Amino acid sequence: MHEFAFVIAGFAVGLVVGLTGVGGGSLMTPILIFFFGVKPYLAVGTDLLFAAFTKMGGTVSMARQRLVPWRVVGQLCAGSIPAALVTLYVLHTIGPADPAVQRVMTTTLGVALLLTACATLYKALRGRQIVHNHGTPAAEALQPRHWSLPLLFGALIGTLVTLTSVGAGAIGVTVLMLLYPLLPLPRIVAADIAYAVPLTLVAGLGHASLGSVDWRLLGLLLCGSLPGIYIGSRLVLKTPERLIRSLLSGLLAYAGLKLIAL
Image (cartoon, rainbow, N blue to C red):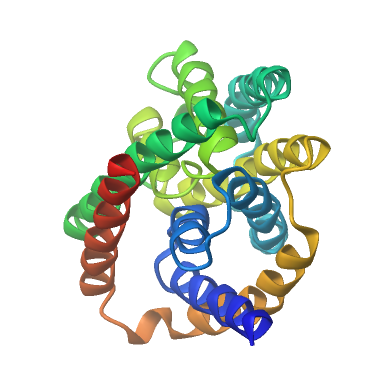
């Protein structure tokens, strides 16, 4: 019965990701901690590989449509991958199951969920009003506001994702919209999904080397999430996006405050 519940949870998260584009980590990790009693370090490690495998399919699909701005992906990875490796080294030195590390993980996860809730609400209220100049030359659209900003924000997101598995979804899209104001929205979403794959894969494999991944649980979640994402992406045009995102932001804010209060 417990196995079926994990598959249902994977399906529900996949459905919401397909409908809203909000990263699975912001939903799956708190569900594993609160509803299934999974230890925070195991929830984070398992969810990182869950995210890597689910977003691979999205990256391949978007790459075939030539939507992925690989230069932007490279700039973000140049900051996020080294930051993820440094964070993994610190976790390896201290030990992921250490009570102090668990406390840092839950508090940081709570803050990350609050940030994700704000980013989700912002996109719900303002997302439709953002207009991109599609006549902008491609080279100019790929230029960030300053060359150092993708590295700095990439490092911040890399650390956040490695500690909490949250940050590469709604937060990543919001950061990209601020750093690359001339880049069309579909390419921003494609960049966010594409750079999350190597980041979550490196962080997830790093957690696996620390014994922080439950492989059986990962398999059950993927069995549910893959059809969920497919169905959600097909229903996206038939659902009130603003309402769903607003409700989701409230749920994420509640989960974030509860984690901080643990």
